[in-house]
Amino acid sequence: MSNKDIAVALITGASSGIGLVTAKALQRAGYRVFGTSRKAPASIDGITMLTCDVTDEASVKNMVAEVLKQAGRIDLLVNNAGIGLLGGAEESSTAQAQALFDVNVFGITRVANAVLPTMRNQRKGRIVNVSSVLGLIPSPYNALYAATKHAVEGYSESLDHELRTLGIRVVLVEPGFTRTSFEERIMSPDQPLAVYDSVRTDMTALMRNWVNAGDAPEVVAHTVVKAATTVAPRRRYTAGTQASQVRFLRRFLPEAMVDNSLRKFNQLPMV
Image 1 (tube, helix red, strand yellow):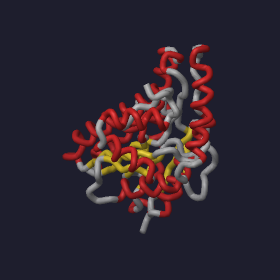
Image 2: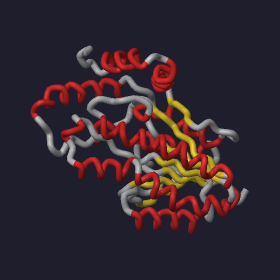
Image 3: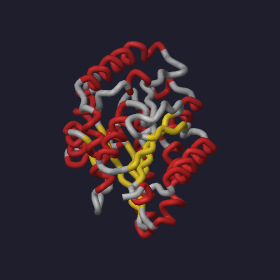
Image 4: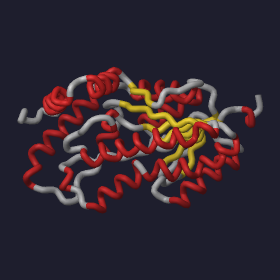
């Protein structure tokens, strides 16, 4: 089989964590894989790494053009790049909130818009957007991050309906807490308030514990490969037992029970 016959996958945020493990899993599944990061390292085990800042329109377009120059096609896009923010919602300025949305939401739309003309010409393609269980439920002291993931959910489902007649499907993958260094790179509020200092410290420790007890990134990678290769995909795939439980609770339990469970899980007063 020539390189031109091999399906091509493009994954953003692929230098470490879920992105890197997923890139390797896609390669094992038979894809020719291109990964991106803001400061791209050398190619990793046959994965071609490219520099891309998903907040920069020109950077995105140049990266997609380079993939097409080298491979001539893009069959799969995995939008994985993202950042976190932990703190009270009112502790972040509008500018900080916009910066978060610029990566987690508009970064996805920029890359999708750059890739879609090729997929439309091919009359086939698959876009997998990595969301989160926090796109399904509230998350105190992660309000703005959860808002970005709720936005990704609404965007992805709507886009899927628009593209189905063109041979393209858009699918969501929703991980729970995953054992990566993601929490070490979470942004802090840019206008912290003393009233939140204690609970913010507690939530940071809780987050670290949840991540340490979370799923291995291979669980998410396996789910992405499934979402990418299933002939007739579902709209969303939860990744891991915890994520599946959260989806079940949100879907079937009464609102008051979900509310109480959420506060208990976050060790907040039952008021």
